[in-house]
Amino acid sequence: MIEAILPPFVVSADTFDDVDPGERILFPEEEAVIGKAVDKRRREFVTGRACARRALELLGRPPAPVLPGPRGEPRWPAGVVGSITHCAGYRGAVLGESARTAAVGIDAEPDEPLPRGVLEAVSLPEERAQIARLLAERPQVRWDRLVFCAKEAVYKAWFPLTGRRLGFEDAHVTVDPAGRFSARLLVGGPAVNGRELRGFSGRWLGERGLLLTAIVVPRLD
Image (cartoon, rainbow, N blue to C red; front, side, top):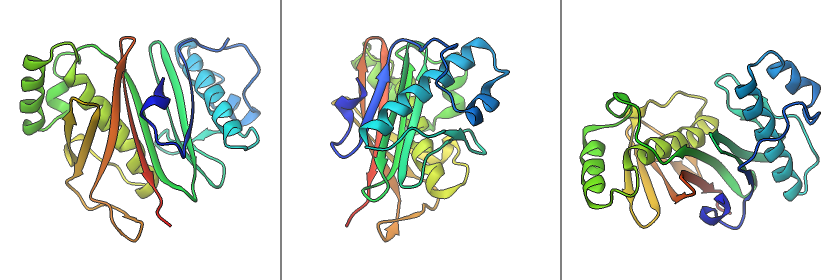
């Protein structure tokens, strides 16, 4: 499903069903990370890694362990950048060659209202005003959840480029109901393609009770 909002130079693999958590698809290093996890977390991890394996294959790469970094971010084989996401009923991975792709960030969320109090914690006043307007005009989409989903994708694209935390208050997201969004960074960004990155642009999709967001930053020749 996520391929509908991706550029052609990256690959993706996603699923609506979990791999059998007992299936032996993990490398020993991965098993060591997840071996004592509860069933829900194990299902997310195993199916996410299964998607990552399929995406690596689409890139022409051999299977490889994908271990979590210091903030849980997936650490990809040399020459690969990517992102993994999971929520109830969906798992997905998007990968690109680092020679062509500078950063990838994806997220999936249920198309449902955020829990009480969360919106105030993750959004700026200007974003909340936008959300209120969109909910009044187009109530068929949960715009509060979509802004959260976009911010998660922003963070996943940001962190591998910087190694630094990015707070919810550090990016201002603007949503286009036609299927795009932008995020203006309110803090200094990393250098990408020879200049400071001041924001991200991405696409979003709402289908099957899910909201998906994707950011892919190309690396210019």
